[in-house]
Image (spheres, helix red, strand yellow):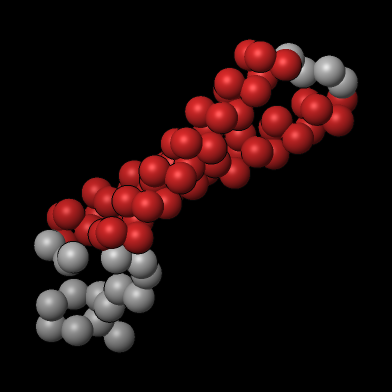
Length: 76
């Protein structure tokens, strides 16, 4: 049930969301670096790169959306 100020928000705060974003961007960077330096050697490597890319990419998108929502609400 929403409060007078709007719906309750039980998710991570601004600092934690920034940390998620930084770790995810670093993970994507390391993934790209590994693919550039080592290449993709087979079907298993394609699967690992795809899953890792989906995880880190999805976390980046989630963190950016969350940061936009937090900044709009003024919550710290």
